[in-house]
Image (cartoon, rainbow, N blue to C red):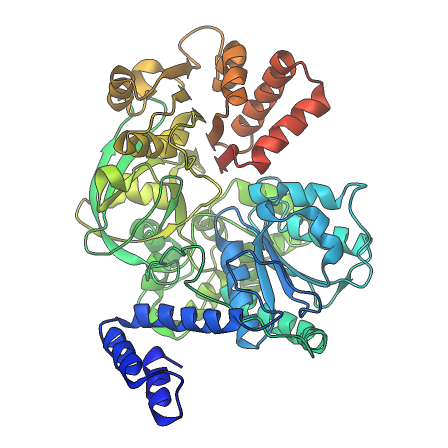
Length: 611
């Protein structure tokens, strides 16, 4: 019931309000927009609920009362936001059924709470070599430790998100379910292991999971007071943009400018995109999702390999379009994954490809060397247009760390994009999105984008806190945003940047800007590692060790430590360098040094944005 309807009803029944109070309330509500009216409605509901014994105001931190209904606790661990989105969808669907629910980021969850749980749903992604996302690391480790409690009688459901082009597909979800079961928990629904094109399957799994949880949850809530969720009361909630992964904004590509030298071995582009009139907002640390168009020339060659003209009509979901349009705009053709090879093998009855489906190691080796364009080119066969598109999965937006602060650039967003390019099978190959931005897209063209918020990679709220930023290569991107933001805020906290790349003269990204920050005093300390400018290769982790004593002193006085860039090597090497520094200058052994960094992580003082 809206506030306006509430007042109308008060007019029709015996009201505790005087005629003057009702008139004043009607006057106030007439001045409010629908969003403000919804807030008032929630406020009134929460205020009334506060007077009832045994109830809790959501967002106020009041402890649950004895006898309160058992809730479904939804724990999520998310690297790019997808698992968080699925967890939020699960929460909304549960609440629509009248179920009590708690949604918690794993990084904020106290593991000793597990022994109090009865119903748990886990939504978690996997990245790298089967590793948990940053915010899931502690809980993942705790469940495998001797400290983990027995969970007999606990009911659990697990949904995993991953990318089947990687070897350890959905490994973290598998780990969580196995560890819960080993502790005595009972699974109520089959674990979901979902690929990048996960939306429909996630919705179906959510329905099945709630069907399984609902009877026990409702039975446990009989005779208990109902908790009324209070949106807009208590902690402020950021207003979500109307533009999302499913509904991106058609922005204008303003600038694409190469920022590496002519003789550099790398091609890095500075990209500026206009968000004018979109109302889109972002914070330093967020990422931008970018949809791209596949190379038309390569698509034409693919169509020729399967003996199609490109004009044949196909259906993708509810949409009807030509097969060429589908291949250019809608389907993944650069990043290979086993599912395509298996479906294409079956559709073409290709014996060699069919063998790969039974040999995971051989399949992994095969797709690692090839884009989907190559798979088709090397295995041509006449194919029906609809069958072809059903072999492929939907094109996924690529996520780039945002390289700007809106305090500096206002209705723009900047990216630092490294072009993926390599020679294979006697032809040049380009990455899907990086190739589009660096080679094919023209300034002024329309490009579909959305913001992916990352609350696990944030500047400290206290502007007096020192920060240490490690961002070699394109990992500099979010730290350009951090520096712009701290400059705009007039933050007093010290700033220390570690940056590395092959050559000073060719690869010092944003050199002029960084030197200006040094000159102005915003950037208090900078350490550079240009690996190929001397006989011995020097990397950022070497500079960290060289400056170990001072770096440890910064940590001891409360500095936040950030890493952005390559997950497989750089981030691990930097972590090991940190361990060495803490051991040497903190007089700790290996285990104590790891615990020191774990505590930094738990306090959100050690954050990573790695890929």
